[in-house]
Image 1 (tube, each protein chain N blue to C red):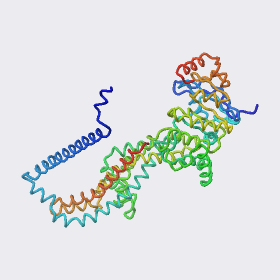
Image 2 (cartoon, rainbow over the protein chains, first blue to last red; image 1 turned 180 degrees about the vertical axis):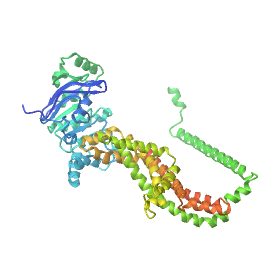
Image 3 (cartoon, chains in turn cyan, green; image 1 turned 30 degrees about the vertical axis):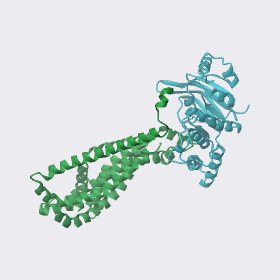
Image 4 (spheres, chains in turn purple, green; image 1 turned 135 degrees about the horizontal axis):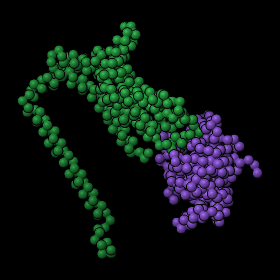
Length: 249
Length: 286
């Protein structure tokens, strides 16, 4: 098997006295998509933020294409340019219109000349069904449209891996589908992905592997079939049983 | 339930009734507001106008002939206020921004500068502006470093520096509040698309911060516009100073009123701009 795109080795992270990640080991291969599931507060978002170097890790290493990116000598800005991170709360720039939201990183971070960036941004927006909304402000869009803009913004520069942090959790139920459609599109294109999600059926559909996080530990990793269908660990079983009872499975 | 439904009038009937009730309520509100305004203002006017000293007060503060004769001179001085105000305001905006950016910066290397910026805002906001005008306006020339030709003994320059330092501290705090009010997710998103910290501030955080603090900034503009008169302590003949001189010549205070009207002529439009801005902002979703 070829070298993994993303590798997490023994990563720990605390906020004050609270240990959020307690030794995470995980790798994501080229074109693979790995879904992280687990209760709120289990560390899913923190892990994604650590990978994108928005949080400093306490111990362990994170590697991108075999290179340690968590070394203090590595420029975090250059690393972040190789990832595409999508947030639960969209975090679009409210003072910029849709097109400018997508262009900003292409122009300022990747040094693409503005006319070319405009072409790239328009094309990517069209792919996610946002043609004609280029000059709208984010506040004029529905939540589903905003999140699709955010996905377009993160994907516009063709990152090595996409990091999706509960991209549907802030949406009204009827808007979840369109955003999942956008992620499905990424999957179909073979984009390497690490995603945190609450949508089990979705994890089953797009994830090649599923990891269950419990109190900062990745206690079970396997195919979606294995982890969601016949979980071995007691906490995983409890978690899935609760979802089943809540009608969310 | 079926019995109740028959009690309801047909579609439209109820709506017309409600609209009529609303109109009655609105009319009553307007009437009450008008009557109470007339009573309160009329009462105050009566209190002043029927007082035993009113004729004297009228002659010393509201003399039309004195107003007419002093107004051109005061107006001439007022242009100096306007010029000073515009120049000082530019300096204040620049200084405030720099101080705010230093105070909200994150790198450890900036720590000494953060301390200096914090001390600056604390001290210069805490000291009365008039004291700063005295201290800088009279103190710096007294040091003897500058000869009489130097701009650093020019009272206009020194007064301007004093006001800029004082208001720069207020405006820095306004900017800082604006920067801190931008949600942390914005910085995260800016970094996530690959911007550097500086680019994130420049392209994402500052534009949003400045939009949020427009009204309080304008508020400080209005205050500065009035405080420009403090420069007169150092000698320059701006509107307030000229009005004082006129007043002293014949013991009539009307010239000061003329100066006040000129200040109002600038601050009132600014205040209305501020109101409109506020309304525009609150009408928006974000």
